[in-house]
Length: 177
Ligand code: 5GP
Ligand code: MG
Image: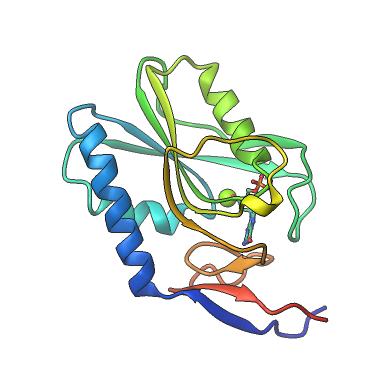
């Protein structure tokens, strides 16, 4: 259990940077005159958010929401609650949610639902990665970076039990068997 997992690079830092630039160009086209509120889902999205907004040269605001899904480890267990609320009012704002990875879709569906109730002017989703093989609820990704295989990823903000967030590349963990 505590043995070091074997990591392999899935997307290196150059590939990530190219993807982030492409997403930023798409977002710039749609939001440059809209003064959007970008909402990152903690903790995984912090690195993507930081890199993404450096490419956006128009007025915007940033906020973060913290969620907990019961149980640690590798699974979203379906019961989600807000543990760190937003500081910015959402009503009437052009809101863009920033996620690291869409897996079952449960976290994102919950977040979009939660935000929709606050009556934003618009609500869209940008995800750096998408793992469609595991989807349980449908989620529309308006700005998608990379589609990934059904493997557990770490690095570039993504963790395994809070470790590996600091890796500059997106890696996958070799199956133990
Ligand atoms: P979902 O609710 O879509 O199943 O999962 C969303 C959240 O689960 C992500 O924001 C992320 O925090 C976590 N997650 C899903 N897949 C992975 C993965 O492959 N690696 C890591 N580190 N976290 C993941
Ligand atoms: Mg996350």
